[in-house]
Length: 498
Ligand SMILES: [Zn+2]
Ligand SMILES: [Zn+2]
Image (spheres, rainbow, N blue to C red):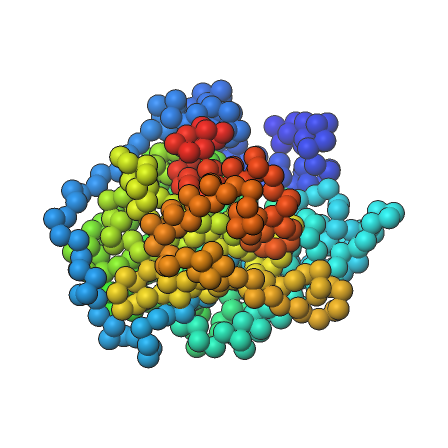
């Protein structure tokens, strides 16, 4: 089977010989297990894997969660206390997304090698330039020295930061040669780098898809204990999580904790939501009971007048349909308790509106997808700082994104930073409530060819290009399928992905 897979991969020119052999070697076992134990037919497996069959049409994939009835009285905003605050009522939160530091990055090497990750070896093709010293827009991750320089810059220039959300993806994209040992070394390296750079800041992490070996594969058995036991130790000992988070981290890489009085964090392991985790082809029903666990904590938060921030790696739009729609229902039910949602994984700068399930004109929540630290692929490296109102709403007041201008950095051989934008002033918004974001999106729709829509696309690409690169179709798709759609295979606004 393994040999046959390698031959097919090579004959179809899916990748070069080394990548074919590595990928088949890594994924061979799960594919055999899925074919043996999945209740899905081969046609259905193929349909889910390649998105050519609506998941709603597959009975074995349908499930839902149980939600308590809505409470009569929503928690009073005025009841929130600010007694644990550092000194003011606005918290400053650094969000680091998708680091993907490549310690094997080699300047001058082939940056267009045809593999999932380049800039490591080989000579550039005739007429092409080699990998840039500070990084490359092509299929490459961040050199170690660029990442270190960026983190040092943040530590020196963002002293006001109160704590950090770190939403995963540590390893580089050399997915065909990922092993548990290599993965753990990369986790140790990045964890140490973050704790040394930010010695006095608490870091709240979640699990990215590249944290496992092979990437994306997170079985629901204890076969992932090699990873979760390390993460539990690192997160508690190095990042400063409370000891009481250990049980659920060991169980499935998720946890809840209190950040300050009345602000609870729920860190989800979204690898249990996505069809890229092939183990879910065997059973995808609320894996590990994570969503039902989240509902219990949201109910607790509602009853104790807490507000909740959710962090996760994959945006819920990229989850399997039942998970995605269940998550959307949960946000609907607890819309006055969930006051912040922060995701990553796409590497782009996006936001997603959630609407009332029974009235799609009524926005009820907003989620942010924070742009990546890495350049992969074709974007400038960057980071974001959120300003959180801790006194009243416990929601995002504003956010500010800073990017490294990679072209200028390579040209002048020194890091060149750009304060890319702050949401409120760039988009001329009164506040960043779901209602104001919805008004903003309606404005974009009414002036689809306008400059502001161009800016949204430019920022989506982290200023690696301009709005002119996105024509009317591209702009409509960005609005309907990204900004207005937070559910998978939801045709309400985005008929193309239905
Ligand atoms: Zn990533
Ligand atoms: Zn990812």
